[in-house]
Image (cartoon, rainbow, N blue to C red):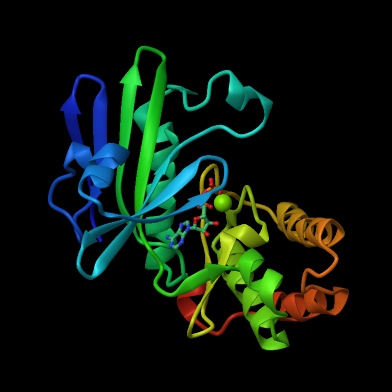
Length: 247
Ligand SMILES: Nc1ncnc2c1ncn2[C@@H]1O[C@H](COP(=O)(O)OP(=O)(O)O)[C@@H](O)[C@H]1O
Ligand SMILES: [Mg+2]
């Protein structure tokens, strides 16, 4: 797939995946546009609000406005320091999603991104294709346990991502999704990047482990136990068969 850069005005740039769109209509990034059309079909609250919008009868998009997390978020909610277009969060996330898709990984398809710059700061938005009939693993585990096979597949999905050298900045169960074919998807690649070396990989897994422990401490009925992580590690340790996923 090809990604096209468009300069819309002095401070406004878009990236468009030409597989889905020839031009990015600026309104696509505007929440009010979708609300007026009554095309908002759902939302998820994480750091900010992620909107699910119906672009066409058979196409649902996920629209995310980049926001900061943590204490600083209260002060400068959605503004980031501009150090060049290629270094902006959405440009990096689009490019990375593109690379991972080309390698056959199960990640959302990037549709379009927007950067609005004013002087030294920018705001940004990203549109991806909604993964059909999927729920994040956190939601699943509040309802029922996952099978060993699913945990194994989660391990394989992470291994494929790591084989490509992709570090996930926020690897937790809300960023892992499962569809109704039991296919595992990894999402939310804000601030993720390809890096060399090995030591960060174990730390990445450890973060996921701690997030699971934390959830269970918070909610004792949360369907997760130590053995589940062993099934995940078995999946992680097995070299994936698909040649394209191996560096
Ligand atoms: N492409 C997608 N398809 C389906 N659901 C998604 C998709 N992207 C995000 N979601 C849902 O929205 C939630 C928040 O999105 P995410 O990209 O993780 O943003 P953040 O964590 O920064 O708020 C996810 O946990 C997931 O439930
Ligand atoms: Mg997330």
